Image (tube, rainbow, N blue to C red; front, side, top):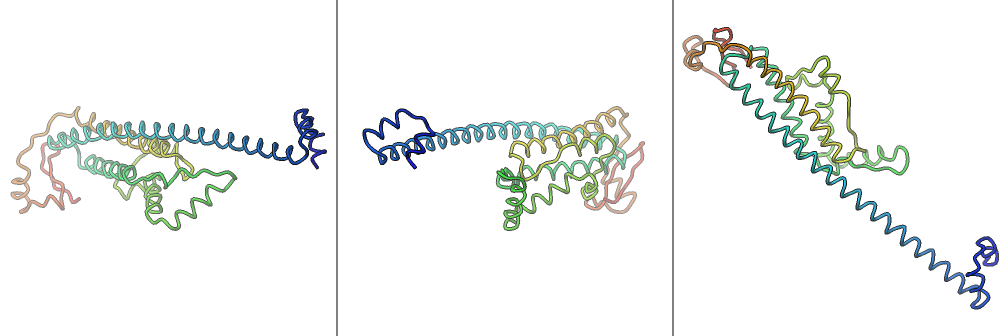
Length: 252
């Protein structure tokens, strides 16, 4: 066997070693060399994995910072719309739509806050292995299963009615453009969340620009007006306000 191996390898060094030290020494040398190669390969793989892990962590931090910026912009738009609403510049329909967008934004933020890296980042060596690993883990992790169910409610525009939100036309098309799954990285998951928050923030900005362009409506003391006109003031049950200078009450 050693003779055949030496003939195939054409190594003059090993042939000389065999002549001086025998077959056992040659075999030991070959095994040691193989062990060294395996060690080097392992070290190289570890270095590559560590480099990838550092890159993934950096990308995730960048996406978290981006989401934080989007949250600040969204909070600013909410404050502006609340002020415009008090000035009577939002119609009852717009008020409902803005509330729905805010509810959907809150749910997306909860997805970000409750996401854990073990919910995704599934890597596979063979086709289909990612799905198998995902199903195996989700079966024993109710928190993970709940996160992905909530993701589906947010990802599908058809389910947005549960939040009171509606996306139509180009907004709905843009919303559907990208999706995420168990094989995505943490950074990719956060990027998807940031993209959706930006779409909703832009929609709030559209409402704000439209409402801000309208003249302020004559308003009074809403609580006193409600009691005088309806006999009670129940802000938990009704929306109160003024539209075109007229007082209105609308069930929430």
